[in-house]
Length: 324
Length: 249
Image (cartoon, rainbow over all chains, first blue to last red; front, side, top):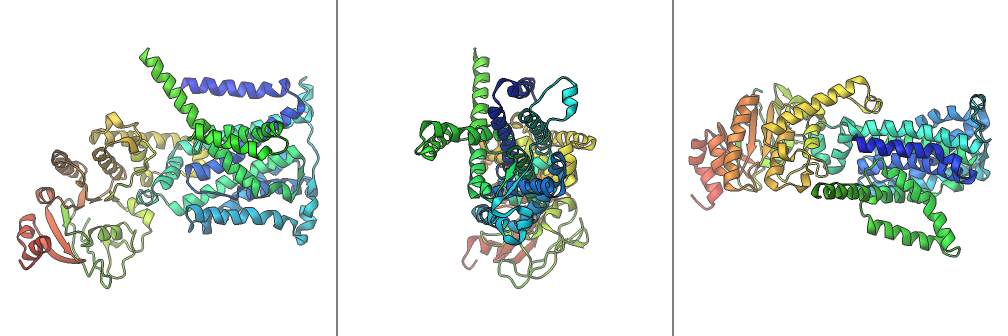
């Protein structure tokens, strides 16, 4: 990392830390969701952006993570923070197992298989045999966690929204650092190599089948942990909040944010959280038409995503400085 | 590497072909288009399944080895129509070539455990040394897709060498190069062979290159071996002349 990148990163983190004290509780809640989506998008981007496997079903893993947390909290009284590793592990396993047969499928065919997962899971959650656990169509309502008393004794009074925001932020930082480590070394190179030229990748000794399944697992784990955090933030899970539209929105997020870019997950998350709101304010009658206009505008003006556009702008600025 | 016998039978692409490649030699594989040269390469790197026969490398069969383990055994290759990782830099391409000589996985990488940084540093140094050897220093950080064809061919060679192969398979390394570049390539291959103690199996249409650097030449036509010997012998072989010139020679 260059010094400039470190400065930018520190500034963003500082801003993220003071944000909940500057805006309303509702906005804090919205920014909490942005961070949650960023984790989900990071997971999908590892799979699609870096490894080249298209998924139209990541909403299913988000749902799986959310339900893990909700069921553990509701039925077993597990504290909210302890449900995250469980949700992550369950999604890692499911993602890996789903990835194994999906390996035989490439490109659009894989997209269809994941689409099948995305459309079927919400209905499975309504299945009456599972109703005891999932709450069926009604879903599950969970309690909002309070800030630990420990902070109060430090003289730092956080309301539940602020506390959850910081909790999510801390988890996100860990997840982003892990992803950055994973992607900058041997494994990250292998992922991109498989995406670019899978025959040559195998000739270089990359076990493509294993790497692809593991990537599917890791990607599902990220999205699952995001779902788990999402359930805690919203305090409610129901099958219909995880329909196929969610999966598509995730895909929109990584493309708008920037494929194969870690920071792209954050831009994408801001887009999928706030652009629908903005569109709604512009036209109550046809918000999705406005959303569509925004979307076309973004991909037209920034074909490499927001991250790609920023990278190019910085490079151009650097050249200009050299010339003068 | 001793006694690589390649035997196939039953399939049209390659019909009962056998030959040996002796350690430390450069063997040229020639033949008209469609003779089965690349098919043979793809059997060696396990992209194709042989229907009969056996391929022995260092005395053990390759047919029970899975595709991604070929590099680890010491067989590196380049491809006829370039198969580089196009969005990656030259340096990263060569570093991927080290994959089979390194071992850190998902878990230790994401935690960046101490061994990972060390392994990464060693990979970087090895890759940089190869980049220097092949004169790619000035373009090390460039994206491969932006480079001229001849340079990309050298990147592929560097990537193949990165896994420290004992046997290097080169599929038409001279195609698309101009006359001068072919001369440089010939010299380079001889140099690399001597310096890294390599065995080279070379598929090539550029006759003067094959004849000048090969210790032995094997000629294929319609999936059958039609001649084998030192370059001069093969050049004079009537069947080879017929295969190339056609008609009743």
